[in-house]
Length: 254
Length: 297
Image (cartoon, rainbow over all chains, first blue to last red; front, top):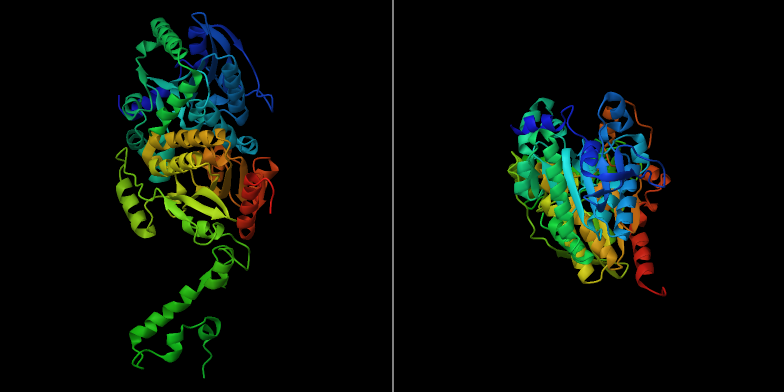
């Protein structure tokens, strides 16, 4: 597959969304709502559950499955209150020294009047800042689109894993083609230039693991569950201050 | 005698009044003279009126006729706000490459370096403002509208790290269209890298003041611009996550007057104060002093 084919694949209808991952990997999931400031953003689903008995805080950007559901989840484009809810629950996880697992799948943070009025920039900025200094283990799995700042807001983690046909990019290839070349037909070329595929990200150090998708079978989810469990089990042995320092160095290298 | 309005309006250099060296005016020297008025006076981009260059400069790049704020380059901003002769540049040698081999990017960087005399889109260093020593960074619109790639992010992160090590406050003059897409994911990672450095500086109990100038958008607004203890916005500056054109295209609505301007940002609760350019230095100095002194002299 070339880069553009992967871009299309990452957005494909029927691809498992965050709720599918949560349902397959997390037991006893209890959703927790709201940012306690303004509203509950349904583009971000968050709560507490267990992975093989280990309590974890789970935060996922949910695109929705059918049309009705997609509208309800705003197509996975979060408002500021979504990021503020995520930060609130990350801090709660830190308080009880519980790992934080994020699933990222978004074309980008929502861009609209309300989002600007309620400080989209500030919400994402503080989400990055708070997440990057969190004194508890964190892992982000990119499961579709990793769209720019809206994705980074939940990706300032100890490690970033990405499924093989997912992308992670500073801008959509459409946006890049139209801004740089004033030609939206050059999307395929932009997809190549941006180095946004899972393998590109692995070689650039922006992702630690590429996950073979295996048609998103039951064994894919079971395997991922095992890997996440092992990852957190190891990270929980590291003193929280050292975790934050290692995370600092992870991002400092870029 | 025919009235020469140019002579009336624009000061001529002294040697013009004295005549050329050998007293003979060549057609070439007259041609050079004809270009002098352009250097002495400039047209305001906003109101179109002719303003003497000296007047523009004395007014910190604000049009005395209509109040339009011209963009200031990085060094002009520093010399406007720092105490005279106190600025010492740091990390001036930092120079980035083309990490993704993005087509045309090397050439673009090369031509900007030649045109601006700057290696990259941010100038960093230490200076005194109102007598208070601080670390500062100032972004340059001439360098791809202050967009942030590896080098811009690296210099800003280093400024925060230097300030943390030397227990200095940071004043950041922010001007940026956002992340530099030519560096793809590397530019996105700068948002995280700079945020981490801001966080450590804050954990050390040190002050960070960001000054958001026109424009502050995209990835820069969604990182260190909005992570400061005190967020100052320059009057009229465009500040937002998505640019107004992108929003209009997305929601297919015309945006209200003043949307995403500094005044709007303050009204919505995201900027501590709006400052006029001419009072910026004094406001910064006072805030810095109140954070470092127990009693003001």
